[in-house]
Image (cartoon, rainbow, N blue to C red):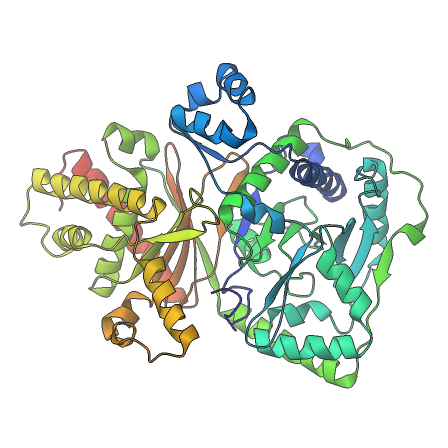
Length: 538
């Protein structure tokens, strides 16, 4: 699906996750934080390559499954049956095949269908600064990490060397539609840039050192979601972005993997870099020759320069249209909802359905991502929050406020919560319908058969015009996350139900509608709170 899509990856596919600051304020300078995060990232890479990385496991009983006794029990079993021992105590190993594309990988633009490229032998880091490309090795031939003081020295050199923007920044090309980018990349190869492109594609990952300080979360979201274009290579599997004030985040290309793998990486890198920093604020950089760091210079003919200018103008025009809005509801959170015996996720999704009904006067197509990593090579299934029950409940709260008692409204909320839990379980167990229909549709296309009538039906078209695209994640390492809307008239909603409050980061191209949506969301959550506390709607 992703590789055949011809839309630009930025805003349409690449999500972002921003990290919390280092708890020690002095460690949030750009060079110190970048060095520590790079070292921790390479430690993660080595753990992965040497098969020391603990497997992803879903624990039904975390206290027992994560105990020393359990780990000892599993270690005594042969590798071929250790998974069965885990099953016996309700610990379910999850698929980790996506991790092989986390490092040393890039999406390569090709006509009609892109390719994923991975070179596991790459030992160099790609660093972006003011639109310039730098590479230096962070691993020796034996896989040992470069000394942190040497990494620190290389980053200081890059910050000092890249003092001005290039006239033509190649990065804008990764914001183009994929067929256009594929054609220009071929021109780059023919112009003699093959070695440099190979170094970009095979780099361990991309580190973007931004020359900007952020004032608030809105600026943070814009920076991590799309930035200013000239200092990103959106085709890398992931880019670690660090601003002048030490704010850090990850923007990742979506075709190779999902948030599960990236979140695991972010969690471990954040924990390691803050608990076991490789350098401290007063650390001295090593004395190095600048020749160890290579600045990539590209040969650009008139046609390529024209393509870069065209890509830049389209990128800037699109960025002017995208709006980002933060939302916080501080009147209740997970703790309150759990005491009410309700699913926190179900309540937020119900609030979104009420909000859409209040704003648009109808039920609209909605999407919530669910991981299917319980299966081999599993990716995602769709949870469809819209149902007959949420429609009935939304209508009661919006149009029939005086017709129902508090007890009746509370019962509707309970039923919606139960049904949403069922949808979550079905999706996680591979019993959803979206991916099944998707496979049948594309199987038909691949065979050259006439398109089945089901997929031409207006109801199917409406179902897949997703106005509310939602996703949730929670981690002590994460400050916020976000992604763009999937349709021009839709919203991208990254949300979290915290212990005592609810928050979401929303994006959309229709600014007024986005603001109205959040106003109605506040209204809907307040209505739900009133009913849960026994107050009638007024």
